[in-house]
Structures are given as structure tokens and as C-alpha cells.
Image (tube, rainbow, N blue to C red; front, side):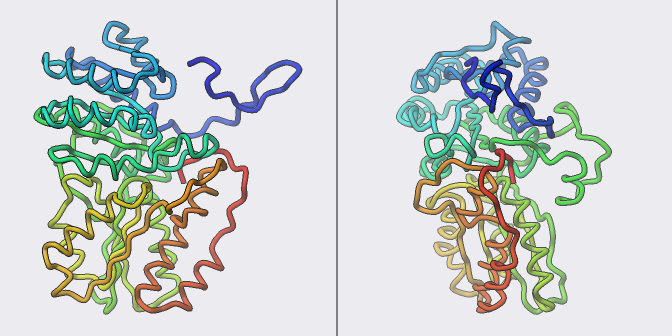
Length: 379
């Protein structure tokens, strides 16, 4: 694990050039929350496949060395090993990058899901990951996990939601569960308050947050009731920040469009009541996610069409996903701009669905330029 990922360095001395520290990473929030749960619950164990540093289980291992298991580069074994632990009454947290969990898919199906074993999959590096490029992008887990029955799949929009979802996963004891989260840093107090309406003086610790009701989404911002035209931006994961910014762009460009921003939180099970209400009260729903086709947006659309909800409403639905291509190495901001998943793209998609193509083009052309070579970051 040492020297696995090396920053820029001075060639004569080998001294690495590290930037100024930012907000704590999602990985560190996972690690600290798992440590807190392990202090309360002696059945909690951590499993990794040769990535203790990358997944944060190195920190967990310092406190709980006898409850930390590195199986080497053998994701298939990690999954089956976790299944065996669950059979014996332990609570395994199997921390694997999204791209590497693909290797253990057969074991996940046969050894975990079919047997309904409560293995907790902590899926790090979900979405586009920056300079590690196509081999490490976590684009496909929502699609390949979403086909399976009897599994809970959730994705946090921020660091507080991540801690809550880890606690939710810990409490689920009758089926497997997955929490997918990105590479990068949390938003910090100022970002959380400004973007999502928190009223925080400091970031709460793992012991200060509670689990989330399974399958329950949330409305982050509600369109004004007197608006004749209403758009709903429905996301899962950390695209929520870009949806909030997209709502601001739409409001700047129009005077008659109200915008609701909703956080789906769960892909399985969907919050069907919330989605139905959005479809019945809005002219457009735009879904956005950090994953490929076949994920959250397709699950939402399948529900709406199969229930006949779109038959009796005027609502138009658009789904935004990582495009059907491999996106090369670069900064995460640059990659999401290439993928068409930034605030300006979300706003333009909503305006086009309202047949306001001119405004959509204005939003795209006036959107902030994204430069190549940026350091990896969440948004």
C-alpha cells in the first residue's frame, strides 16, 4: 500500500509536493464512523482487498488490529470471507473501490445476496475519480448492483449523510447493504450551511448523528407554490451540490419557473412516495447521478412508467448519467464537465425540456470554464 499513489515530487530529493490540507475526505469520515461503531459493537469487523490506506481501514486497524482483515488483491475472496463472517453473527464492513468490486460480482450474487446475508459494502471511489483515470472510475456499480433483489443501495450527498448512512447500514441486519461515496473532500461547515440549509457551528461527530429511515429521500429546496411552471432536480449522491447550483442558474435566467431540489438518497428501495409527488406537481423532472446508464435515473423512470404515473400527468422526465464513453485522466471538475454533469448542464437540460432552447444555450455558453490539470476534488 505504501507509495501506491505518489504526488508530484522533487526529483533530486524525492520530497513530495503536497498541497495545503482541505476538508476531511469522505474516506476519513467512513473510517472514523466505523471506529465509533466498533467501540460500541464488538461484532463489527473491517475487510479490505490490499487497499487499507485507500479505504481508510489502516486507521481502523490501528485501533482494532484483531478485527481488521486484509485479504490481498483478492476481491472475490473478500466478499465470500465477509459472507462467512455474517453467517457466524459478525457485522462485516467490506470496503472496496467501486471499480474493484466488479471482480467480486459473482461472489456478491451467490454468496451474499441470494442468501440475504447482512454484509455491509462500503463502496469508495464512486463516480469519476480524477487523475487515476478510466481504470479507477466507479461508473458502473449502481447499474450492476441495481439488478439484484433484496439489497439496499444508498449514496450520500455530503459528509453528514455519509456518517448517517454508515449507521443505517450497520443497523440493517436482514439483507446486504451498500453505501457508495466519492473520492474527495467533504464540504465543511460553511459549504453545508450555504448549499444544503444546515445550521451548523461545527461538523458533528459519528456519535452525534442518527441512522436514516431506509428508502426515505429528502426535499432540500421546494419550488414556490405560486409558480405556474415547476422543475424538480432529483439526484443521488454528491451531484446534489450541482443541482442546487443549477436551481440558482434557472432562477437567474427565468422569472416564471420554480425549482425543487430533491435528494433521492436510496436507489433501492426508491422513495416512491416522494417521486410520485414530484411527478404529479412538476412539469419536468431531471435526474442526475455519478454513474452510467442503468442506474438511479432508469430506476426512477421505470417506476414512473410502470405505475402509469406519466400517463396521467404532464410531467417530462430527463435522465443525466455519465456518458457511454471512457473519460480520460484529469481533474474531477474537468471530467464532470466533459461528462455533462455540472450545474450548467443540469440547468440547460431542464430548460430544454421546457422547450426553452435559447435559454439553455445561454446557460451553457455562460457557464464557468473548466481548466485541465486541476487536482482531484469532489465538485
